[in-house]
Amino acid sequence: MRAESYGQRDGVNGIERLRADLGWRPVEPARHPVLFLNPRSGGGKSARASLPERAAELGIEAILLEPGDDLAALVEGALERGADLLGMAGGDGSLAVVAAAARANDLPFVCVPAGTRNHFALDVGVLRHDLVGALTAFTHALERRIDIAEVNGRVFLNNVSLGIYADAVQRPDYRGAKLRTLMETAREVLGPQAAASGMHVTDDMGRDHRDPAVVLVSNNAYALDRRLAQGTRPRLDSGRLGAVVLERPAAQHVRRDRAWTASSLQIAAPGTVDAARDGEAITLDPPLRFVIHHRALRVRISSRHPGLSPSALLSAGMLPDHDRASTAPAGRAPIAGR
Image 1 (cartoon, rainbow, N blue to C red):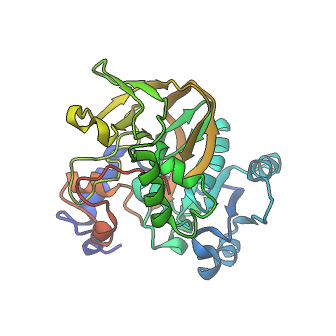
Image 2 (cartoon, rainbow, N blue to C red):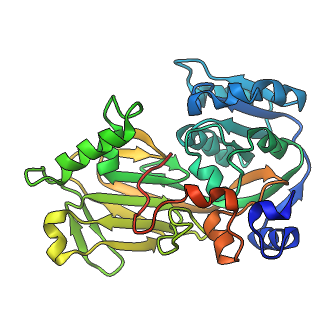
Image 3 (cartoon, rainbow, N blue to C red):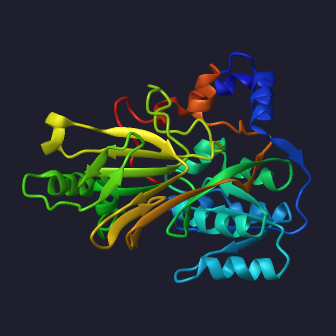
């Protein structure tokens, strides 16, 4: 590992100290590791990197998802065959399914960044460009415990978005034209004739937010005040949900946008709510109950990877150079889950 690749002030020793502070520790390889791969995620990243073949060379059972496969059922089958480590190479929505099973069975979980944006990989400290290197989390690994969150019993690793982004994700043309669809949805949702969302949430100051444009609830809070690393999470083990509420433009004369943290959160609505859970479209029945499980998930990464998010590294003066250009622009709250 080259120290300069992380833009480090203290080099490798600095990274090692920070990892130790977060609880990363070396562990022995699993006896029966299993990796699930979605060959369609990220435009076929796993195939281009020959991940199935590389996994086999390392003694990892690789299971490729076919159209129509039930990922949860495949994971259950692997557990019945004695899997003692579960990994996923795919989008963040697929990661959540496998992570939920790992948590339920107190098994370690590995994220291989084969999705489109790989937000979870970024925040847990996996180098997103190093798919093949990420496989060494099955052999030469570091492990720690992080939080995992739920909304109405459904696990999420990153966030649940309600409002503009959630409305856009529901549309069939979203995947092929994300920006255009999001802007069209924004015009409809925020336009003068837009229907009220009906959502109601109370913040940590006791203030009511009714019919907000966007509500984002995340597994640990995002860094909203750091120019270069905005949109990443400095911690994944605070035991606190992050909450962001953005009001509608019509309410800007009394604008009360708010960001806070909470151990649990409830959102009321008059009917079903469209949501984006880790970037995947879902529908939720009210009330929406959010909870976080403190350090409930065992996660492993390659010992060659930093194990810290850009915002965590920035706090220590070690923002990784390769992620500077990919962080969110200043002044924008993160609303995407993938």
